[in-house]
Length: 435
Ligand SMILES: [Zn+2]
Image (cartoon, rainbow, N blue to C red):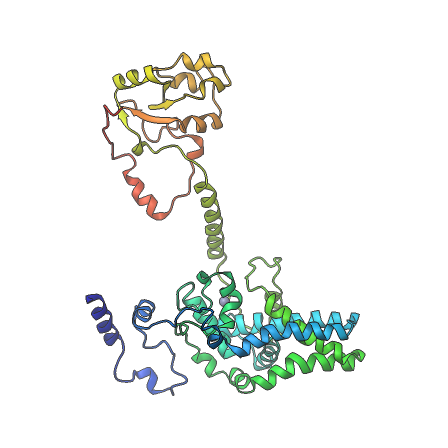
């Protein structure tokens, strides 16, 4: 209860009642949408606003976004019917593929990198071309798309992310377009775009631009080029859109120049002709840190999927008498301060059972580490899996490499695990007498 009161008062404190000096000089459109949001915005919104009820079969019809629903289902149907009447010509196929990439670049180089992320600057000429090509991809206006995309990056995987990936694959890819969002996407500032003349122009004439660029232009090019207006409409127009919506061009940012990234190459070429400038480059050192983190995450998954020897904290500490008593009941061997239960392994020992039997109830450290046979890393790793206890006074220094099996000498640990491992050598549970 007090929590709720707290969050309300903190909102009051962060929302100035008087207009701020910054907003005096701007009209409402130009003021950043996130200028007055509280510091705890996400939790505050989730706590104080209700989401719409979940989609079920009974409310489905009322919750469908009919425009995008029709577009996503109608285009494949119209396209397939059209394709059964109009045969595909080689020139039209080539034109469809070229136009797919051109309109796709409107989204990747324009909507995504230029407008949503401001990753570079472009003169008005470049902007008008990208705005038109983007309209030909039928993915909404620049302003609408960038607002959603900025909210997506800002609230990734929270309830305020318009394409929340936690809701599953289908929702993140297509579901979010088919039904009305359960929550208004989190606030994202697009006041810079509201001031941009090209963005304003495209938003105002969006439907005209869409029909022209998505259907008229591909039809006219095929008509005047090689007399195939119908093919241009069906293949470069409608079926191209089916590909755009179901196989969108990749947004991944390839880091090295030779990695497949036509968007980056295009922006680079534009910059050589003065049609793009101020390309944002992230420091290579930081890029490599990110890549290393991804690699470590994958390695950690492999590490976590394996079984590891018990930590010395988890093992009972026993004295020599207990070790002797227990050895009479089961085959125990002392190596490097650890007591190992080798039952089940004695017969499998490559050097023969007699070499192990000789050391039951005894210290085999010297014999194991080269006195009799210099065991391999794999043998040492396997031995560590058989640890059942620590001999009191016999536990060697934690950094002694005989105590740490080779497979454990280099391991990936989370930051929080590093802090807690300080207790590794300090705590010793006395559990002598445990049977
Ligand atoms: Zn992005």
